[in-house]
Image 1 (tube, rainbow, N blue to C red):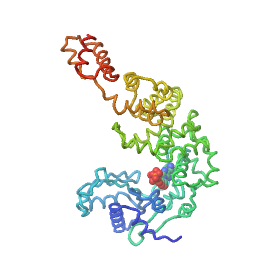
Image 2 (image 1 turned 90 degrees about the vertical axis):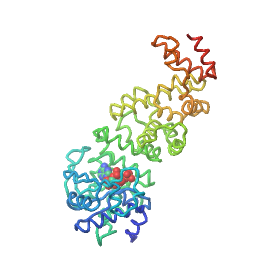
Image 3 (image 1 turned 60 degrees about the horizontal axis):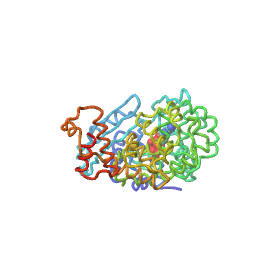
Image 4 (image 1 turned 120 degrees about the vertical axis):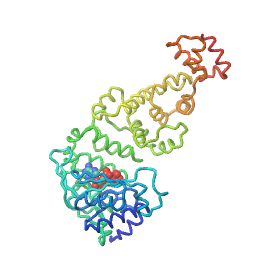
Length: 439
Ligand code: ATP
């Protein structure tokens, strides 16, 4: 099908990004430097998805292109000539020079990555490649799948020209994930996980010849660094369809090669299947936990792995090298999960004693999956209410009453807190009387 690519560009990008794209195109034309929009953004434009970020590739020296942008529009440029990359960070003065209203300047860092077209060679399977400056054609051939290996040229009269040497557009129409050459998964087995992610995200199919390349690459998965494999799993766990992607990884036997304790069974599926609604619920939950980008992924990991034993978690950590915060959360979810039924008949103070040992994101994850309404209610009350209950009497009050500082302080304050939580006392007078008794 013949498409009007420039019209597609105009409709897929928001106003600000489109104006910035035109600026890059104009600047590149002035330097007679071919400039391309590449990779996932072209794929998403073709799929009619909204895009608000893009990757740009120039054929030629990145430094001169970056300098011309800096000279004309200000901001800040960080150039890595050795890698052929540059990052342009816009500031408010850039907006003034561009005649954009400063009120449109976003509250996050607005930046664009500019890259020189390059080719890659792999000296060793699974390792990072050696990179050399090259043409757009080579740059597309080093990519993972045909659907990610298209470029739209932007400079001057070439605006909107499609570069598609590998049949990406046709594969996109067929809904096919296809590697670019038969050694692709051996060079970089993270691509197998990427393939499964795109399959699940777009409802596509990995093409048969590509599927047939997986067995030969399976043994190389063990050579991937912890960081690279964790990154791929992070990306999967951030997707709304994470459950079906993990099920597909299991079907293709791609979890065990990462580590033998990794599994995805019916029960993990039911924990993760509602991750989209958990995330929505989280946004309106009253307990105000950290909603950062990292934490979004953490929830997915915890829902998936909470049924592992402490031993298995320890062993998995040797392979994936989790951060210490995440590891603490994972151990905590595992403990809560394996003792879940004991939370059904528990007093508020016992609940606080137990749950206050754990990171809040772990408690939250278990709250989401608790199968029993009574247990769910206990976790909900802890998160929303109980954890905030404190005695009115403080350490200073105890000192004023003449108590020698020591472990008794914590004991008494804990006892008073428990009394408030369990409704044994309901006013400061009652609290004071209880303290008299304890002293
Ligand atoms: P997503 O929507 O998942 O972020 P994306 O295509 O933007 O998709 P990135 O991970 O940002 O994905 O990568 C940008 C581009 O770089 C991809 O479109 C692909 O062309 C290329 N790429 C990324 N990872 C690899 C890889 N492991 N091997 C080859 N090419 C890759």
